[in-house]
View 1 (spheres, rainbow, N blue to C red):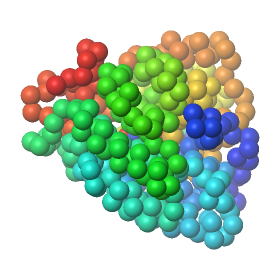
View 2 (view 1 turned 90 degrees about the vertical axis):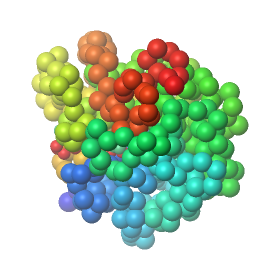
View 3 (view 1 turned 135 degrees about the vertical axis):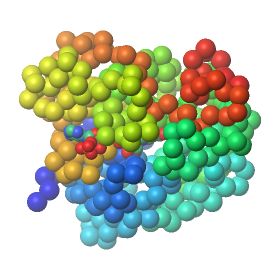
View 4 (view 1 turned 90 degrees about the horizontal axis):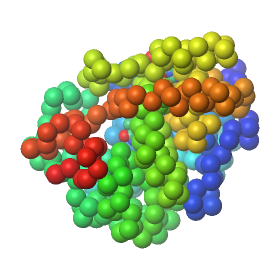
Length: 337
Ligand SMILES: NC(=O)c1ccc[n+]([C@@H]2O[C@H](COP(=O)([O-])OP(=O)(O)OC[C@H]3O[C@@H](n4cnc5c(N)ncnc54)[C@H](OP(=O)(O)O)[C@@H]3O)[C@@H](O)[C@H]2O)c1
């Protein structure tokens, strides 16, 4: 019997639209470790456990099975559609004038939904690479960020809102210079920004920028993605769950260090979307934000753990002439060309 955490005990975040979303959700990217069947089975268990937010994407290749799980849960009366907050994302090869609508229509059909709560532009450029490709692979057609090209895609996202197919729209993997370039052009502002956030990569400037602009941060890789594929690892990467100060806090609370990452994330104000197909883990990940919070002193220690250690560097999206993965993240404070 799956343990049930009352969704009413899970903190909520208010978006600028006045709508609320859960302060923690479940990621659904199985990468090359877990099959779509394993991920969708975990989603089914997670609904029964009390999860109400699911972070989906077309490129994760499992929306058709997750949709069956949603349909089943609705049919059995386990949950009502309006109690779930479901996201999806347009992948890089479907950006531009017409394809965003096609991508959203496919996600709606696959997910068995007639609206999506939050629809993202997954990456801020149309640079395509095949899922699971080698970290050294490059696409000769890749181009640097262009505000015009981005806005062409954003306009389609705005249309989805106007058509009632999507409730909110969001951006992902953006930087402050890119946001500065596009926010003044948006007719509908992004409700959220999905970005990498974990104790060793806190992105304080971008986090504060979002808060100042009423954009809710969603944190991916909240545990530091300890089991990500080798192609996404470098020798310099720090394993958040092994940082001694964090382990000490975990010991004081008698929990796994992963749990400390999640408590910290929710108490700081971002929405973490941890992934796991293991019931004990995903139940614990939800439960932990309803009890035994970190103290102010512990939150202070967590703040000091930032090492600016970006894990998902995105190098496969680089264009010809780019110096290195840093160019994707505008480290000089201007949009890299
Ligand atoms: N917008 C974007 O561009 C983007 C990019 C990346 C990810 N995402 C989203 O973010 C989600 C999460 O990212 P992620 O899976 O890379 O990283 P993560 O959530 O930081 O790490 C997931 C891994 O942590 C371990 N774990 C989870 N709960 C645990 C617990 N209670 N105790 C111990 N270990 C635990 C599991 O490893 P084991 O399986 O080895 O036990 C699991 O595979 C994705 O599923 C996806 O939805 C979005």
